[in-house]
Length: 232
Ligand code: SAM
Image 1: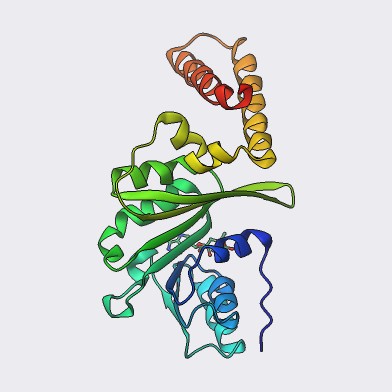
Image 2: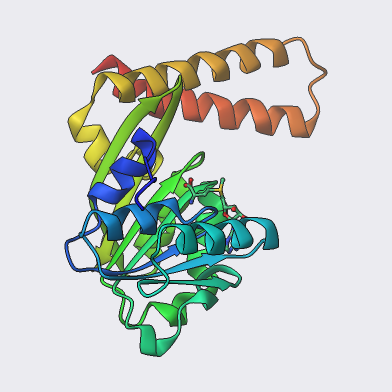
């Protein structure tokens, strides 16, 4: 029985999974993504990894209810330790977490990426951590997408193995997204810059401690960097 209907956000993540991929979905929660992909006949096999018992049990229940036990293995595991060598996973998805947590999962599980050709990430915040991790660890960005759902803006970053060099602006906003300059992209960065300007203004009235000075300096630099995108 196919009862899985994905959010636009997860459907966008799914669209970057290649036909016939062997998938590890890390932080799978209800295992909606692998269930959807198997039902859609896009993939045959997947691992659903989950570190918290409640979501792990939901994933087990859903996979059973969908009749997909022969296709999806659910494992209670931290990060990429859900992947075993014999799985021959070639694609990893990590969606719906903060960018720094995703980067930590990739960093701590680097030795599990032996057979992996493609990593698809959907950070809720601080996507820059993933771009930075990619550049420092022999991965390059091959595609990006930005989308808005229920008033929230999400970024998707797709990585494949290869050398990459990105400048500060590309790390901050994404090389592909920068080229595309979509309305959603401009909305996101307009919102961010307005918020930074508001915080900076409120700090003008604060006592000038070293901490405040550093914060003001950081905010001014961010506004200047991202301002370039908005003024072009
Ligand atoms: N991936 C799904 C999505 O995008 O809709 C679920 C996102 S949910 C907000 C994040 C899930 O990641 C939670 O179920 C959480 O328990 C799990 N998680 C967080 N850290 C993890 C880790 N180190 N290893 C595996 N799962 C993790």
